[in-house]
Every structure is written in C-alpha cells, then in structure tokens.
Amino acid sequence: MILDGTQLHSFEQQLRSQLQELILAHRPDQKFCVGLSGGADSTALLVAACRVLGVANVRALHGNHRLHPQAPEWVDHCERLCEQLRIELVVGSLDLVPGNVEAAARQARYDFFASQLQTDETLLLGHHSQDQLETVFMRLFQGRSLLPMRVSGRLGEADFLRPLLAFTRQQVLDYLHQQGITWIEDPSNRDEALTRNFLRHRIMPLLLQRWPSLDQAVQRVTSWQQGQNALLHELLQEYGDQVSFAELPESEVGQRAWLRIFLELRGHFKITDKALDEFCRQSQQGAVSRLDLAANCALMGWRNHFYYEADMSVYTRAAEALPVPLEAGETIEFGDQHWTLKKVAPGREDGFYSLGKLCLSTRHKDLTMRWRGRQADIKEVFRDLDVPPWRRQALPLLIWQNEVVAVSTLVISERFRDYPTNAVAADYCRLLTVQ
Image (cartoon, rainbow, N blue to C red; front, side):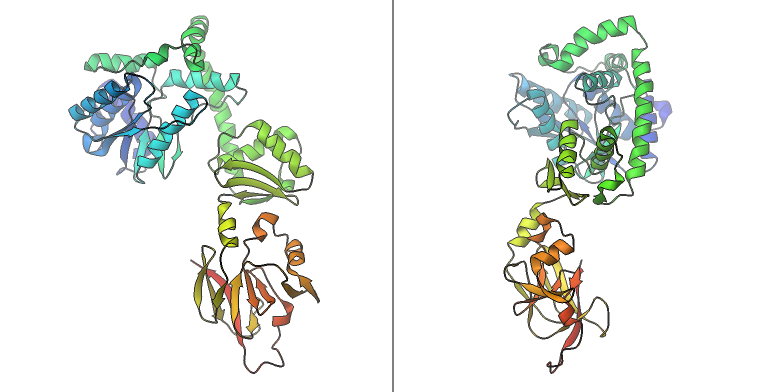
C-alpha cells in the first residue's frame, strides 16, 4: 500500500510520484524487488521504497560477484540493512563467463535478477541521472547510438523500472546523510582503468565545469531520439515474424535501423551494426542467410524474405521424432504439437479421403505426392511451397503407405481429393493442430 505523500521525506515524495506515474496507477497491487548492491544508490532506493510502498510489498536481491576480498562483508552489510528494514533478502553467488569483467558481471547480475523475479513483481534499479549521462557518452564513444538507458522494460517474465533517473547523485547522497544511513563504497569504483570510472572521474567533471547544464542538454537530445525510436516501434508493431525484404527501406542506413527496431520489439538490444549489415549482404546474394541472436534464436533470410525464429531447436527435435500412427477422430502428440485427424463432410477444400492406416512422420526420403498434375518428389513440393530449408526437416508429413497425403496443414495431394473408385469405404478428413 502506497503511503500518503504528506508523511514522506521530499526524496520519498519524488520517488512516490515517479512510481505513481510509471506503474502504480495501472497496477496498484504490484510487488517490488530492489537490486541491492549495498552502494549509495541502491541503498537509498531500497530504504525509500520501503517507506513509500510498505515493507510487506518490497524485498531485495543481492548478486555476489565474488570479485573482491570484501565481498563477504558486503553481503553481511546488505543482510543487516534488510534485517533493520524487516524485509526479505535473496543473495545469489554469481558465476562470470570469461571476457570483459564489467560486461560479464552485469550479465550475471541481470540473469540472477531474472531468475528470482515473480510475474507480479517489478524490479527497481538504482540508476540516477549521472549514470544516464555517462551511459549516453559511453554509447557515443562506442559508436552505438545516443539512446539512453530505458526507464522501464522486460527482464525475464517480469518488468524492471529505473525510478531514480529523475534524481541527481547529490540528491541520493543528501537523503542518505539526512536519514543517517550508511552504505558500501566499492574500491573498484575508483579504478580508472575501467571505462565508466575514467569517464566519471576524469571527463565528466571537466565537461560539467564548462557546461553546467550538460545533463539537461543531453536529456533534450535523447528525449527527441527516444520519441523517434518510440514512433518506429509503434509503426513496426504490425509486422509478424516473416517479412518481405521489399518492406525495408532502400538505403543501407534505413535497412539497419528498420531491422534494429524489428529485433528490439522481440527483446534483442545488443546486435551490432556490423552484424546487421552482414546479414543484409548475405541475403542479397540469394542463399540462406543467418544472424544468431541468442541461444537457438536467429534471424534467417531466404528467397527475399526474412524470418524471426525464436527457437531453432524445435526443428531439430521435430526432425528426430519417430513416426506416429494417426486414425480418423484421434488426437496424438508429434513434434511438440498435438495433431488431430477430424472427420468432416466431403467436399471441403482442406479435406481428403483416408484410405486406411495413416501416420505422421518427418521422413522425406523416397516420398512423392500428386502435385500439380504429376507425381512429384516431396523436395520439389517444398520448393514450390516456399518452405524455408531449415524448416523442411521438421515439417510433418501425413503418409499412407509410401505416399504423402498432406504436407502438414499446408497442402493436400491431388490423388486424395476425389473418392477413390477402388475403395470399399473411406473417411473424409481434415488434418489440424490443436492447443
């Protein structure tokens, strides 16, 4: 339950306003987790959130990277703070993949948060306006864009929110001092060998000394870009996972921007310009093109279309499935889907006559079907139907003896359209997938 604003400190009142505007007005029963490092920003956010939202609606998550000798002391500090606030704390021991330590630690931390969040919880992160300014400059130096950190978004099955982006670093520190609350100072935050720390301690003070309103100026620029970005997101919402390349702009820059928004709408925010350009180049050559996005997830290109494949492994699993008998009126499981052979009235365009025992299979070798007035090899039928090559191995075929009756729910053999003269009895059926 959100407290009456008149009972709150000015810092808490501002946080209350941010939460009311961003989420509580729409979901008043929402629960919250705070990503707690023990530093000043997350500590101030946690304490203020408990005051604003009530301790029954808040818990904390601490990711222990185990990178510093003092890491156990930081865990103890977070445990004491949460005991004082009377809230639950979940501590995760994080494993980092080799490579860039900053990036690996951040990824491990967010993976931990995602694993702990429940669907009725929103994760609160303690980034403030100076963090935002640093992020914009880092993106600029890396050649990525001027777009800032998102105020909100999805993380796993839940949402995240950065309610302190409207606060300054000094506001955070003033609040902690006034409340008499201690926090952790991570020595690594002074290590100027790390890019963000170099920017924070060497570059930003000089820029802000010369241009005191730099943060406001950058905010105006990024807000304008965010508006453009939001418009593109809205315009591309209507597109499904299969799109003709003809829908893309003609210029390379336009194609790159279009594809970037298309992928962002599906949760992919880290694809480089180089990777997008290479995907477009390969696609123009006419062969199958592929851009790997995540584990088993890819953007595929073929025959003037591109396809977003959320899980490529489904095709491998389906291809390995053993043939399964299927009789009229029966429902079976095959290739991670449920299939039924439903009896229908003769004459339906999507129906066919069943002459006997049928089966579902992904076997393609030596199979033919009556197609466009001739007996065609099933591979030829796939090409004519524009079935992408990576999907062919997994496409279920309804087979009678050694002949294809139907290719999934896409097409039916011409041989089984008309009632066979030599059949004593035959059911007229329709092949369907069911939920």
